[in-house]
Every structure is written in C-alpha cells, then in structure tokens.
Amino acid sequence: MNGADQSSGVEAQLWSRPQHAVAYQEARAVLNAQQQRQANLDDKALRTARLTTVIVSALITVIEAFNVSVVQPMGYIGIVLLVVSFGVGLAVYSVSAPILGPNADGVEELVETDEGWEEIFLSQLEAAISTNTDRLDRSSSLLLISDVSLFVGVILTLAAIAI
Image (cartoon, rainbow, N blue to C red):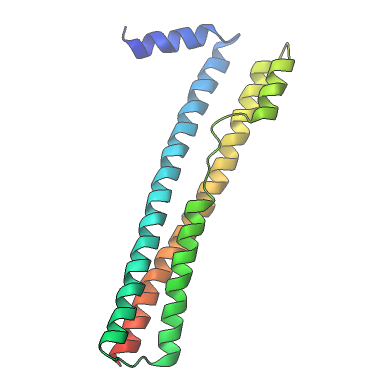
C-alpha cells in the first residue's frame, strides 16, 4: 500500500459514510482540474494579449517608418479588432479566480453545525464546481473571441496596408 492509498484510507475514516468520502475525493479532483484549466486559460489569454501588443507595435512601426498609407475603413476595422482582442484577452485573465472550496461564511456555517455538516460541505463543493464550470465556459468563449479578433484584425490590417 503506497502513501496515496494510506492517505485515502485515512480520509475515508474521517467521514460518517463512505459515499461522503468518495464524493469529497471526486469533488476535490474536479476542483483541482478546474484550477488547472483556469491556469491554462489565463496563460493563453496573457499570450494573446502580449502577441496583440507586439503586432500592433510592429504595425505602427511599419506604417511610420515606411510612410505606408492605410486603406481607411479596412484598416480602422482591423485596428479596432486588434484592440478588442487585447481587451478581451486581459478581461479573461483578470476576472479569473476559481473557487477552491467554501468561503468564510461557508466555513462559519460548517463550524456552527453539529449534525449534517458533511452534507452541507459537499453541497458547498457542488456549488463551487458549478460556479467554476460557468466561469470556465465563459472564459473559454471570451478567449475564442479574442483569438478570432486577433486573427481577423491582423488580416484586415495587413490587407489595408497592402492595398
């Protein structure tokens, strides 16, 4: 029996019912996976924002250095999309904060409850998982918008310079 098996056995002994122990272990695994997914989304959002900054800086440099004329409507739309990409990427990064367990009120409720605390705790974990799922889905959608805006913005801006 390895250390992980011993740890699981000890955790199972702390719960009044084995179902609660299993539910806790599974909920904790889901919360940890959600935390990792959020970290990955944050990383992608930050890379998108950095790439947008580099592209906008390069475009400004090329336009100024080579006195390139920009076809106005297409160029303006491209630049607006690049700004949207940057803003949405930062928004995804800045609003992400997965819930990892009960908040202060939840802990206080657990401490004040003599019986049934396990059900309350597990329902708090269930609520955290649900909230995290909604946030992760929203962040994923926003990141897709950011990436598409970046791609279309680059294409339109380059097309506006090339014409």
